[in-house]
Amino acid sequence: MIMIDNKNYEDFINDLEIEKLISDAKEDKFLIREILAKSRELKGLSPKDAAALCAVNSPDLLEELFETARKIKFEIYGKRIVFFAPLYISNYCANDCQYCAFRKTNKLVKRHSLSPKEIEEEVKLLQAQGHKRLILVFGETQKTAAQFIADTVKIVYSIKTYNDKNIEVGSIRRVNINAAPLDIDGYKIVKESGIGTYQIFQETYHKKTYDYVHPKGTKKNDYYWRLFSLHRAQAAGIDDVGLGALFGLYDWRFEVISLIQHSLSLEKYFGVGPHTISFPRIEPAFNTEFVNKLPYAVSDDDFKKIIAILRLAVPYTGLILTCRERAELRDEAIKLGVSQIDAGSKIGIGGYSEAAKRRKTDDKEQFKLADDRSLEEVISELMKEEFIPSFCTACYRLGRTGEHFMAHAKPGFIKQFCQPNAILTFYEYLLDYAKPETLKKGEKLIDKLLTNLDDKTAEKIRLKLQKIKENNRDLYF
Image (tube, rainbow, N blue to C red):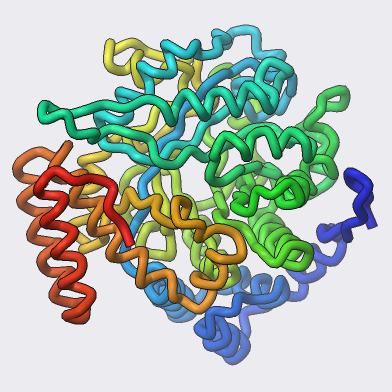
């Protein structure tokens, strides 16, 4: 047992046991098909089941795995894809992570924290794209402690833009956080600002590797402080939390199984698993040699397996695919169980305003992005596959979080809210931000989607769509 903040928690990462699960796993067609059948019950999978799926390599079983992931994602969330954008607030950091351009020993990075005025400029540019959901990213220093995070969140929520009819069309309706672990009192301060999800990446769950890439003498070197950071967040009342691992630091199979173990631990102690799971691969970073010699680099084929296995193992969670990946791979991977993506992203401090001025921000960025398409370009690609672009934040305003959200998501009931709300927020986007050709294609897609719904639901949506057309905004079920 591990004591954190005077509470005992079971250490859910046993390196030897996980390595044994991996080494014992063999591709057994009968067993794999049995696991795939079990996953369709939407109750998740055990770490042992996941290890077996990691061993799948034959083309026929891979396609069965991918097809199962597609069906499970559709069963729970439908064809909606939620959009968000990152906003980097500060790149000052007291840590020295070897893979990160923001590490404290990287003297070539230009350090800056956005002022309230600069935050407003960045947010308005994001609103002008059509974004309604942001994740704020902070370096780990005393300057960016709990109160600073909370104050920043309040600033972001306060920023509004209006159209020529004085209708509020630009607002951020949900602010998520990616920041350092806090103590319980710190999490309570941040919670009071009205955040959505608090996301913390363990980076790697493998203890020896974790110690190697996070040098001693830094706060981040404390493996268990980070490992149980989201347990503390839950204890503080933040019931939407996000897990993540940085793939490429260690064996991808170890990280996948560990993410599942982490999910199970949160469910065990709090009855609520992760609202989201992220699975980015390491990308090149400014003045960072470490990323050029990765012994555990993840191939595209294995990356697709990671997505599918996580969808089967933790079916209710939101799987986040970011602009780190190149456009072609993202278009393909979205079909394997992804439910949230970013678009039009900038990851340098002041990146959106600098881009508007056509200035480079290489020495202010944490890493490189591979997909530089605009939000509207990504939306156009999604429409070709009849995915529903969504800017929905309804669950958070209606209290469908934590246990309440899980009660709807686990059996697949959440789809009855997700699809209608996706249509409504997509229509808002089309009217307020889209080019005429995108608006035309979007309205055609909405009409087709409505014909696939039952008459009662479709009529309710049509009534709200008409209200949106009459300049009402932020309507949801």
